[in-house]
Structures are given as structure tokens and as C-alpha cells.
Image (tube, rainbow, N blue to C red; front, side, top):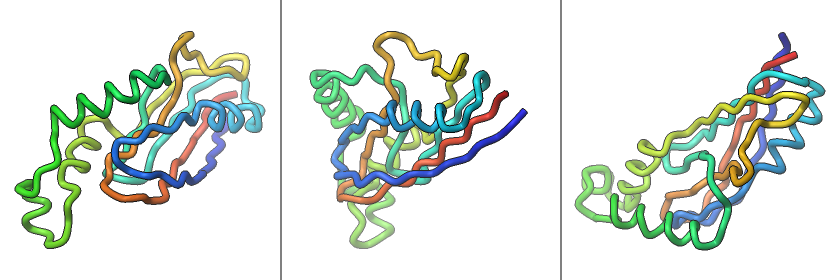
Amino acid sequence: MSVVTKQFSLDMQGDTKIVNITKNTQDFLKQSKLTAGIITLFIKHTTASIMIFEDEPGLHQDTRDIWNQLIPANPEWQHNVRNKGEDNGHSHLRGQIQGQSLTIPFTEQNMTLGKWQQIVVIDFDTCARTRDIVVQIMGE
């Protein structure tokens, strides 16, 4: 069994923006020369998440809308109250629910994603930030 680890960064705009990283991930998998195993993606931030998604404009809007309904921005979130100047308590809560990692099996150097499945990063924060993503590939 071999392990290959790579890291890359994305400049994100916050505000529940979604960026497709499927191609980046598939390129890393091809470069690894591993043919079967699992690939794990991990985002090193508490106000962003990685998820499987159908990357379609209507779902981008629906996703923003549902997060705004489920966990709205609110200056009364205790994170904001206890940390003067902070306004992203809702961003942390969204990240906690959505999660920061994802594991996908692969065979013949291809991820076993379904027809409409893509890998995306969703940034819940209130300002632009650079996001660091770790890709670890384990297999043979």
C-alpha cells in the first residue's frame, strides 16, 4: 500500500460560494499512478466544507438559500458576542454541520463518482480567504 499526499489552495470569496474541485482531484489521482484505493480530501478551515454536489447553477442558489434559512447570520451568535469584531458565528456552525472531509473510493485511476456527482468546496465565511485543501491518496 502506498500513500501520496498533496495540498493546494483556492482563493474563495465567502458568502456560501461553491467551487468545483473534481478536476483538480482527478488530476492528483492520475499523477499518483495508484490504480485502486481511496482518496480523502480535507479542508483545513472551520468555516468551509468539502462535499459531493451536482454542480448546477440552480443548486448553487438553492444551497445558499437553505443555509440562510437553517443557520442565518445573526450578531447574537455567542461566537460573535464573545469575540468582538467577529461576524461569522453562522459560518462556523454551517461548517460544523457540513464537515471538512470526504473519502471516495477509486478503481483504474478513476474516482467512483456517480454521473452527476462532483466534489466541491463551499465557503461559508463572511469575507474572502485562501482555503487550503489536503488530498491524500491511499492504494496500490
